[in-house]
Image (tube, rainbow, N blue to C red; front, side, top):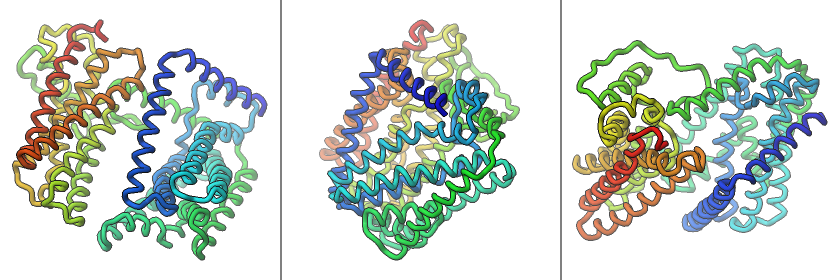
Amino acid sequence: MQGLIYLYKTAAKNRILKALRRPVTYVYLVGGIAYITMIASFLVQWAGRIGADTPEGLVTGLSLLVLFLMPSSFATYAKRKGIVFKPGDIHFVFTSPASPKLVLWFTQIKQYLLGFILYLTVSIVGILFFHIVPWKMFLYFIFSFIVENILEGSLVILLYGNEKLSENTLRWLARSLWCILGLLVLFGAFLIFTKELSFQLITDFLGHPFLLCIPVIGWNLAAIRLLLLGPTVVNVICSAAYIAAALLLLVCARRMKCTGEYYEDAVKFSDDYMETVKRKKSGDVVGPGPKARYRKASVTYKGGYARAIFYRQLLEYKKNKYFIFNLYTLFAFLGGLGIGYYCYKTGTPGSIKGYYVIPGVGAYLTLIFSGYATKWSKEMKNPYTYLIPDQPVRKLWYATAIEHVRSLIDGCLLAVPGVIIMGFSPLTAVLYILIYACLQANKLYINILGEVLLGDVLGAFGKQIFQMLFQGIIMCIGIAVCVVVTALTGVQGGLLGLLIYVLIATGAIATGGSIAFQRMEVL
């Protein structure tokens, strides 16, 4: 145990010292503090406007966080995934005389530290902004940090280190957890369709006895409500069951025999994870797990010069199982349905607010996904791209042409359902789709411009922050233009003015970013 403590303490110290020697660390620190302050201020003001700056509002936020994190974590643990062992752990920790259970426990130290910071921050925020007495937040901090870590750590040992349960049993256990999450989604959808859509509906859903009685996940929610809102019969019973479950799992974890058979699965998952990270950096949008299977495909090349880049990408997409579509396409479709239903329920289809819901959601999705790589980015790493005797602007256009097609399809899925439900004109739908496609193109060209201006100075994370900030500024100016033009000419004129502005901004950024395709030394 002393050896593991020394290893992780030394690794953490070296990582901190290495970060402090890099000037970019201080840039990240200042930017991170400013960003967190801005987001916290916005959330506090928003909570005050909707009347959620109360203990009930904090409980609602914490409950949503639990529902978002806990089921997926348990499912990955059941499949012996979710814990990433670094090469140093594989070579030194696995071969050490330390107990396999102890190894699992020590790998969660980083999560414990992050949890400590999170629960401490929530406790301070609850006292200052949600008007909760300090002793209640102190009890919440102690309960969350101790009981939840005991339960999760014991569950990790039981699921990861269990050598009696077959792989098929663990697989079905993971599926059952996802089924529980699916039932929660269906139950929430039932409440949405049967009750008036409001913030109170979310509160009623998270406090419903059916939800609180779900083992472990619901019991956790009941314990939070007991500590911050006060006792009820359901809260007390479910909280007692949660504490009893944590103690029972701890006893079972201590008594369970574990000889380290999970090492092989852990090594395989870590290798797959590192490979996934490399593939994402190269432009593939993938997830951990088995490698994708490609189909046989062919394409007829037409034209010459930079157009060859387009056909090479088309061939690569045709080999994919879902062609150019991915999970983001599903998000766009569900977003379109959600927008239409929300406006229908709230009675805002004919108002100015209703007209700008769709482009607002499209801009938000574009912004939060602006740091993700796509297949076009691999073209800048291929030497033949720079040997093609064509203009850099044409190379840039054909390298991103398929992304524009996909953006148009996603824009249709996002806009058309809402337009139909709200009864807008076809011209409005066309403007929505074009605005969304231009915002996506703007995102692509900002990525390229970031490569040209920053290179490797700020690293991958720094470039993502630059891209998000740059596009955020573009969107803020676009909002101002849209508001002014709408006030002068109406909604249709406002949308057309926004489209023209985004086109001009995208063209200017594309012209600057095309330098990246001029010569390889630029990057």
